[in-house]
Every structure is written in structure tokens, then in C-alpha cells.
Image (cartoon, rainbow, N blue to C red; front, side, top):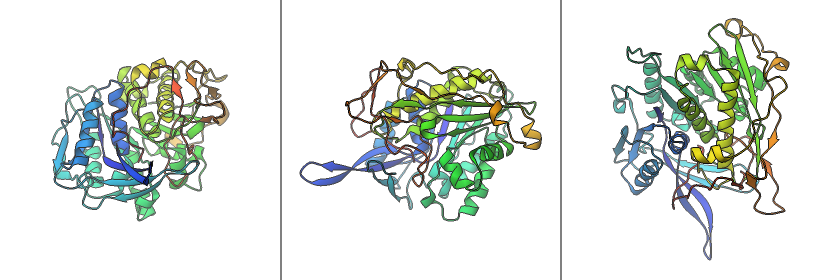
Length: 417
């Protein structure tokens, strides 16, 4: 079972209103919230830990969790208002945000709200995004992951659960970059999995290459570092117990983009869901993943994210929809080779040419059909970027998958925060 914690808010998305000009449509969102939705829709047990308002926006948030099979057992309801994020979407431009967070319910989650003990079947805790830029919620989640990350239990094979972190940086929410990065590195060190987009790496370590950023992050202590690359797919470095490192690249999936809202959140959720579905959700199992296992997990996550990109808003697919998207995982010439270095011991660079590489493959026509003949295709697999960046596609694939899309409830949606 996976626990997601962090912000849960209402995205007020700017939309045209016939005869009236423009208005704002309220959609449920927030990065950890979207990830919980993605996991629940894939059929994996998941709970959300956080504080929700009792106002009508809070009801929208709770109902969407319920409809997506996300347990409400760890929710706390409060009298504070719901957080609002006003969003302006324009074609070929990054989303623009205005947040209203002062004194709101999710932000007010504190250490006194933490359960003294998590459910015994908790195998993973996911955290990150803008919740880690606000107090008191940031300190509360930090206390939780530091407590649970070192927990030992006789009835749990590996003791502590997997801790998975996605910073999903929004620069305008960060008052002091130096202080934030210092804390971020503390969270990375406490994590088992660090999922950081290439765009976020550009913000965190602007003077380093992606390869240097990956290696620096892995040396801090995580077992696995994943970087989503927008249309180019994703890359991951897995450190084994003997200090050797496996590197795996997966390609982007070519689809017609509607928008990229929720793609990075869905990638994260789908990757964790794959581990849970395959019985790999433990620290020992993660360390023992084969190159083929890691590749398949990343490719599954890419497929799920590409489906989100083919839809308006954060509408994660079901497991059936992901598995029905028939795209053969391309075979790399060097996929059988492993980049092996004693990186954990000396943090030496990993030979890029020895790393597993994959070539980009377009989605099959049987799987994805464009809506219009003249529509330009854009390659989009994941979005794990912050609004300031351009590493991810500005618009997300609006294609239809071979599997019938899940019916989207009125007033639902969300976005990567």
C-alpha cells in the first residue's frame, strides 16, 4: 500500500465562456493528489494523508479521491478554506499560476496531525511539490519521512518503507533558493527514490549537466534516481548493494498532445504502481531490480503519462488502458550491457557510452489516431517540470488510445503542481 502526502488544491483553470468572454473552471489538483489518483485508477491500494477543507471545494477533492479508489482513512477535515491555484493556459506557452495558500487547509497540516503509527501494510510514502515550500506542512512531512525512513519493524521484511520524492519545483513559491536547496538535499538523502525532472535539475544545479546532476543526486543516498526528460522519455540510475550502478534510458512515446497537465504526476504514480503490482515494493527488491525490470517499469510509466498527455487535464488512465496501448518497447543495441561503476564509493562518472540507450519510437497507428489531418504531432511522455522551464512540451497529446478512455466526471481534473 502506498501513502501520498502533500498539497491538495483546486485549480481554477481559465476557459472561454460562450457569450460572456472567459471564466474559471474549478478542477481538483495538486501534484501528490494527482499521483494518488493515478495510483488508485491503476488498481493499486493507496491512501492520501493530508488536511482537507470542509468547504464545497473540499467536497470536490474528497469525492474525486473516492471515485478513483483512493482511501480516505488518513484524511483530516478542517474549517480552513481550500487552497486555490488560478491557472492560465495558452497554446505553445507554459502555464501561468497565481496561488492563494495563506491559512488554507492543506497548508495547515502540522506535526500534530501526523498519525502516531502508519498502517502495517505501508510499503511506500510519496511526498514533494509545493507542499515542501510552505509551513507548517513542509516540516510535518519532513518529520514523517525522517521518522518512517528509519523505522524498523519485526513484521516488515525490510523495516522502513520506500520513500519516494518528487520536488516538482515552482520557483515562484520559493522565497530563498539557497535555503530551499539545502533542505531539498536533506529530503533527497532521506529518500529511496528521487524522481526529478530535467527541468527541475536545471533549477537546482544550473551549472551542472544532467549527467552530473544525476550522479550528484545518487551520491547523496537514494537507491534510485529517475529524471523525466519531457518528449525524450526518461533516464534512471540504480545503485546496487555492491556499489555498481545500472543506467537505463527509455524513449518518449509519440502522441498528439492536448496538454501536459498531470503527466509527471502520472509517471511517478505509474512507476510506483508497477513496483507494487510486480511485488517489487521493498528496499531489497528495489536494489535487486534487473535492467529489464527497471526498463519495463519506466516504459509502463511513460505509457501512462503519454495517455494523460492525449487528454485535457490530469486524467490518469486505468491499468487496462495502459496495457491496451500496444507500443512495443524498443530494444536498444546496448540494452544488455550495464554501466557498472563503484559510483557509490567514489562518485565517479558513469561511462555514458556504456549505458543502456534506447531510440525513440512513434506510437503505432492502431494505438493512437490523430484527431485532424493537419494536427501537428508532438512527442510527450512525461512532464516533471516547473512552469519556468521549457524542457517539457507546452501542449500535450490529444490523441485517442486504442483503449476506450475513462469517462471524465464533471468538475474533475487536476494538474501537476
